[in-house]
Amino acid sequence: MAIVEDLKKAVAKFPAGTRDPEELVRLQRFFREMKDAGVARTREYNLPPPDTIGRSMLQVRRKAT
View: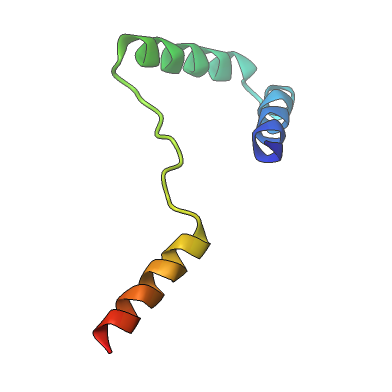
């Protein structure tokens, strides 16, 4: 998962470049606590791959004609 690794690298670099790294740490801690409490949730990527969208649309068009 190259995207996940790129994102982890970007997040790791951010505290060094921000003016207020303590605030970032506080917000990360707050978000983690809210996730643990079940208040905040992150959604998984749930879109179908583009080829399946195109295939479905093509099948619908063929049935219509």
